Length: 481
Image 1 (cartoon, rainbow, N blue to C red):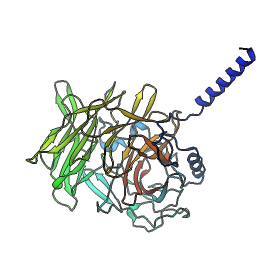
Image 2: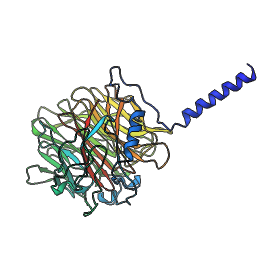
Image 3: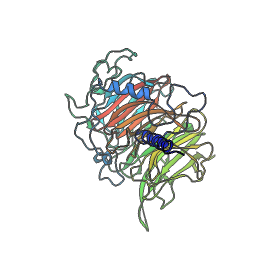
């Protein structure tokens, strides 16, 4: 080969390498399934270029909504935190949250609306059959506090930008912010919002379950009444509750147990107001637990985030003919890379078909993202994971998913770029039948998000609640084509 041709080849290779290496784009996942909506991005964690450009243009005129400058370590309670409320400290107001473009795949219909409390929020529909409107339930030291958002009229795609009431509890009928704008800080011109306790409460079969700051979990009728303690959990750690046939309830939580090797955290289940039954094996440890209704019973998953690896377990739970709790075999679905004590996850499930365990975790030493592990029938050891990679790692990485509706919608927090200190994005997307994630839009950008919740109503709109150091906000979005 002549020197001129060799030089030309080397220059072409160098240009290609510079293009690939300098883009800063995250690794793309699998392509969408055949027949997927052409407007939806492929299974990459970045939005489509047009949506990203539109979101950038919108950001210039969006109203400020402080996401705070709290460190990631303060974003959620650590397992060894002194108190749940200490897990979400105040932070300086030095960053803005910007709304995504209204045509980016999930149009803003109402909100964002700042709520009167700040902390992890539960979205709850009083009429589960209609699911046309949602309230927010906060945990106030083991007592459920209901907040009804004071939304104005639904927004159309051409609604003008308007300021909304800064406090959902104020009862104001002021119109909500229009598409592309955001509510002022929860504390702007008013008192600082009161703090809710960690973790969020749970609702099942007409009861609300909340943990107080000492770790005691109580089951209170939604209509009011006695609230006997059900168990002593590890304060500030996750709880989960689901309804079982016949109006029965199942609660899962984490609790410390002393062993010959020292204190070990285990996952436990409680049927109605019965005794606590171990979900995880003694000595294995547990750092997160979640339940989902499943084939007439429930599906449980828990995470054991150790220093060198992260086993994810799952098992089924059902009722015997005598009405007692029956546990299926414990399966180690997946073993991820090194974990940490605040790692969480989500259980997602469509109207029919499989369930998915969603885990934000390190795939290996150089990659971090969301692993989706599909469960068709009974959980089995060593299930394959479908990855959707983030631009960089994030700890903790809040994530939430819908259950009982199809398609499955996911709300997750990820970095916007590879660079250390990059802003975070609250990204909305859907899972296809194989567990691949298809991004719909970047709903918000900010410095930090501490908690996120998502629900879908009967019309297909998505309801989001998210917590930053500035407060907790709720909004409604329409998922368009």
